[in-house]
Image 1 (tube, helix red, strand yellow):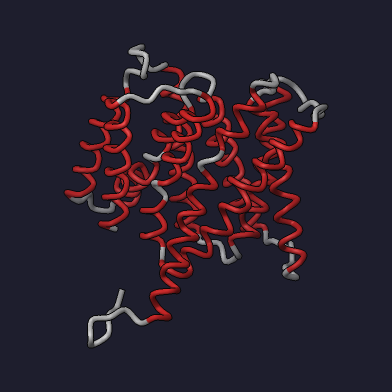
Image 2 (cartoon, helix red, strand yellow):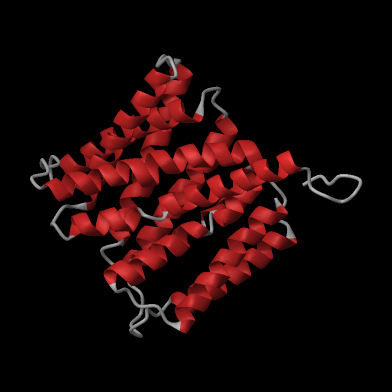
Length: 302
C-alpha cells in the first residue's frame, strides 16, 4: 500500500483498505459455512445432490433478484453459452464431489484439502500454458505434501478414507480447471451474471446426475428446518460469499483476498469441532497450518 512522505497511510486509503480486508474475511467465512447446512440436511437423510440442488436453486433465485434490481440484461451470445455450460459442468462436478466427501471424512479436513486448488491452478498453468514453475511453487508443493502427510491419519488415529481423499481431490482439481478456463476465456460479463448462468447449468447437470446415477428427482423438503438450511446454503456460502468477494477484489485486489481465503477452511474446521464434535489434535492442526501456508505462499508470490 502506498505511503505518504511522512510514512503515514492516508486516512481514506486506510479505511478503504480495512473495508476491503473485512469483505475478504467475510467472503471466506461465509463460504466456510458449507458444512453447517450440508451436515444438518444429511442428518435428515437427504443426499448430497439433493442438498446441492436446493442450495443452487435458492442461489439462482437470489442472484436473479439482484440482476433484476440492477436492471441487468439476461442475454448471452452462443460463445458465452458454450463457456457457461462448461463452467456449469465443472461447478457441478466440484460441488458434488466436495459435498460427497463429507460422508467419508470430517468436513473440516475436507475443506482444508479443497483449499489446495490455488496450487493446482499453478501446476495446470505450467503444464498446459507453459508458465514457468518457480521455486515458490515447488516449495509450496513440498509444504502441502507435508501437511497432507500429517492429516493422513484422523484424530482417532484411523487412516483417512481413500474414497474421501479422492473425492476432495476431484473437487479441487475440477475447481482449478474452472478457474483456469474462466481466466483464459475471459467472458466480458459481470461476475453476478456469470455466476447466475453457471449455477443454472450446474443445476441441470446435478439433476441429470441425480436422475441417472443418484437418488432420483430431488424430493420436496417437508420440514421447516430443511427449507431453512437450504435457504442458508443458497444465501450465505453462495450469494453473500460472492458479493463480499467481488467487493474485496475491487478494493484491495485478488492477492489479499486470496490470502484471507485461509479463513474458509478455518471456519469449516471450527464448525466441525464445535457443532459436530469432529476431532482436532495437535497433529491435525499442524497439518492444516502447513496446507494453509502453502496456499498463502502461492498467493503472495503471485
